[in-house]
Amino acid sequence: MQRIQNCLSRCTNTEQQTLLTTACRAALAAGRLVKERYEQPHDITMKGAIDLVTETDVAAEAIISASLSNDTPDIMIMAEETISSHSLETDRYWVVDPLDGTTNFAHGFPYFAVSIALLDHGRPLVGAIYAPLLDELFCAAKGSGSWLNDRTITVTKTRRLIEALIGTGFPYEIEHTLQGVIRQLEIMLPNVRDIRRAGAAALDLAYVSCGRLDGFYEINLHPWDTAAGWLLVEEAGGLVSVFSGGPYSTCLPEIVASNGTLHRQLVTLLE
Image 1 (cartoon, one colour):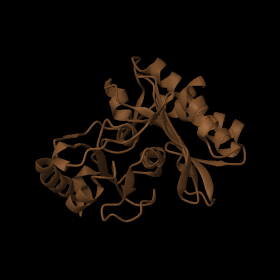
Image 2 (cartoon, helix red, strand yellow; image 1 turned 90 degrees about the vertical axis):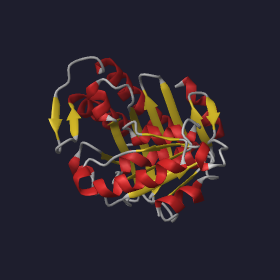
Image 3 (cartoon, one colour; image 1 turned 30 degrees about the vertical axis):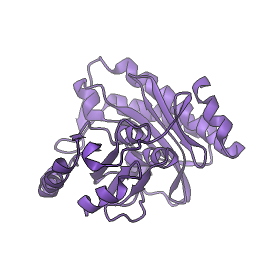
């Protein structure tokens, strides 16, 4: 936990310090398990035609839930693999993706992360994304900036879309969205330097926050995919919205994030 001390010193109040410490502790604990099991055989269960879950998702979620419940017993948890937690009638709750990029993990493709955020009246207050194979802990607190391990991070200064590296993703229900996804690629590809589709939206958003990507867009994501990354991008100086440029919410089916300078250009293409 020593790596987040610089970020904690910038937190605007002691509650944020406590909550961010809680999020990071849980993310690191789950990340250790994910890393240990990475090269082991996996027990795979299908949630859909191509949407899978492994025993590691479930085990990591259990570790996170236990850690969060111990540290903040009065705050409820929305976690990806716990179906009963998906409808919470409360203004403040944890949003947890124990393993964002499960398909990558199951195939041995080393791009996945643990993502945890606290939503307060629909907006993220603190967030942590941990990529265990690279041992990279991204974290942010509202009003206190974004951090990668022990250093502050910012979005890029890229001004021209043709110089931008953009991330995206494809929804699991691709048979229902294929034509729209193809149309977006047809419009986007000729106007940017290149596009990356790596398969973990939380980590894609973290990469926008630290300048590895200039922007990111995707449809049909869930709150646990975007909540922590949303905060990371905004606290690093970027913008997050829906495709029309309107305010983003984790309840909405689309997201576009950028360094801010490119935002209007991306929104114009996505509209």
